[in-house]
Length: 115
Image (cartoon, rainbow, N blue to C red; front, side):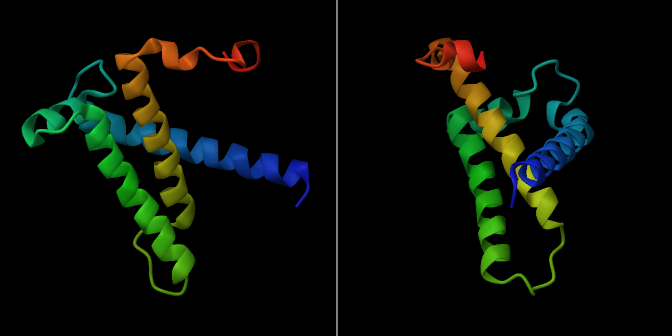
């Protein structure tokens, strides 16, 4: 696979992830401006931290991707692109939860290159 093909995959994944996030956000935030509200609510009711709660959601998606990779012929309720897009979103949300607790996490050796 060449770099152009890879960049196309990254672009498609990003577009799919954005679409899923935009579609699901109203139900998850229940009208809150806080995009992390769902994790905070569930964490409070379950005795976990918001990041731990998000990790559980993220691992569910890792498990579904793993299941597809091991058994691609088993009928799936969701496309593999959708599963990877959801996983991408949970990775971003989990990082956001950690940054909310400690904003220095975004500061590092490569600040000029990424932030």
